[in-house]
Image (tube, rainbow, N blue to C red; front, side, top):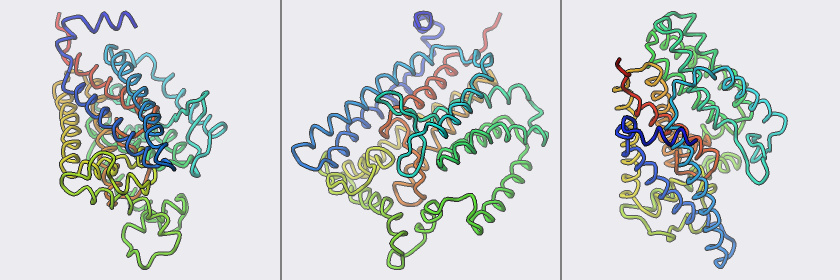
Length: 387
């Protein structure tokens, strides 16, 4: 740790720190803590409890974020090239953790995704995203231009299938889709043949059609969540209305914010506790109701700046491994932002994808910080040393 801190203060690294990224991260975290306080307080049964409940949840999130910033700083000061020595440990260690979830996982809302570690809950599928980014990047560097060959292209797909299928079995379709998106972004950046990508896309459409028609491989509630997006509310069954409830309430909260918002702690949907999980997966809806269109556009702008700096990192990196890691991080964050906000606006099914650095949760916050730390590490070492 001390060695890493010494590296941080070396001029050749210090001058390359992307402070814009750091500022964006801190800004999102501050908005997150305020939203968690307001949203969780709205779920208190009595008005007298609201302040205490809100402070407790916001305090936890603040602690998660502060620890996350420490993790971010540590990862940023490490040379990402060293990951090549630990690829097998990362890959198979991740598989082992996912298998442990099947044995010791704690079930919550019909899914077993968490392992209890004392008072904390650890979600291994979150760290799987980082493991996939790192191990896939090393794999793609090793195969180099051969990624254009179809057998090698398929081998890269088989690289992510075991963790993706184990996550799908929890069941956690949202995280499984994130893994697939990361793979797609990274193999595209590595130079995969577009014809192979197109053929795979057609195969996915065909397989998806079979799954939809037969119902095999898809949980009943997952199918219903897709169906309700296109149905009239008057013609729904009770089960369908139950599955549509979260999205409908979130949409009411987003629309209720209008232009300037209803004000902090003044949101009707948020304050009344009508939006379930409105400090986790639906934190954006609570934020939108209280800050309105202006607040939403401001938050989106910060995310766009963060993603834009990621694109700059990819463009300026002279190292293939660094460029692929940055591409994986960018795909991971971008996919989360797009899907979560679409879900909150009821234009995408509810799949349990949190908003990066914003939704409540320790494992998610630390995973996001590791990802941003990797991005900063690549950015700091984007130039190859010349001798």
